Length: 315
Image (cartoon, rainbow, N blue to C red; front, top):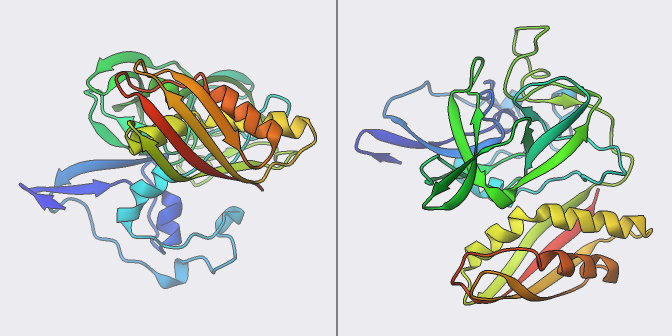
């Protein structure tokens, strides 16, 4: 939109640009976010789509990337909010790690990982957008108290050079893990062996393929009494790692859980979950999710109940 000499814009990753037939590089370091920004009216250069660059339906683009259907930019933020992490993080499986922000060498790392769909905030607590793709930092965030609550803030690069921006996330949306990788290229800086930014060294990574099917969880309908529905979705999104953990529990039992899981919970005035139940997909999986949900926390002063459906599948 245009107001008081400013344009309101949203960042778009390079994969979506290619899917729309636009030959332009993504903004290094920001291609894992969908942010709402203000720029002066008249900034930048208009880009035109080239139909010949749009990947054919059903065929991957360069380097075997899947073809993308062009979508209006207005949908990009909503897409990011509902995007799901499509790989497992189970310790017993060899799986691809999230792209790293912060540099480092291949090997075993402490990482602070974010789920797709998690809210992104500016340091003052203003909502900035959402996480578009799973990624991780090699250094812990700095705690910051804001009107939005307790946030964990990280420095990010916008193109080559030193960190130039600070983005913050809800503490429960940041997962501390140890990742062991084969070869990594980093999302926030060019390769040290080749200063030319290419698709392979600006925002990607290379590692062994998963040895087990990967899980995908999509949030479906949600209903609540006494709790704001958007708050419910936000809390559930921030705990998708718990759902993936339960996938691992079920698969260790020899199961391949797929279908719709419905989770119900009751929350007290302190924001603590006091009762849960889950049904669908598989008893082991449902019981695990219900138990994990008892550790979730909601904002104070919002007692009530909620029910949310999650579509679970394996790829």
